Image (cartoon, rainbow, N blue to C red; front, side, top):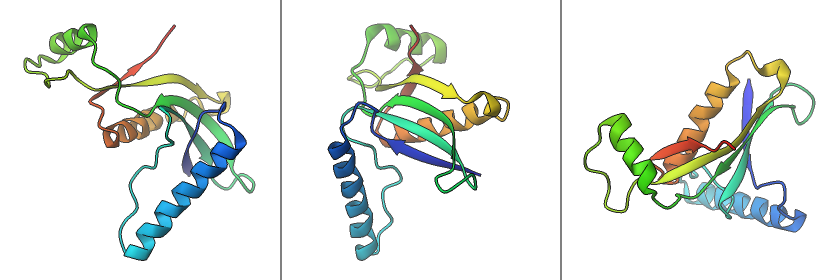
Length: 143
């Protein structure tokens, strides 16, 4: 069993994290009071987030299995990326403003969990988050 948590980046101050947590809980409560489903994803404001995977049943909080740094905003279009998409996918008519790109900044899976397909599950979760954010493609940033 895996539990996914989307958190603000590590450099976010304690008080900012507390405010984001309160805002997310407020949104959930408002939806519950109105009899509506909460949004599928509540992304921290600011452009970046950390997606963490925890193993359920390992202690009170669970054991952290992996973390993935991602962007949470649709990035500006890039002629180079647009051209690559045209060539790779055979798409002739791209959206007027170009395609919306989001990024995976880093991926880290604890060594004991590297053979279980956790990275593939994370890519699916990240794709879902980016879809909700209105992004067309996700790129892995490598340096």
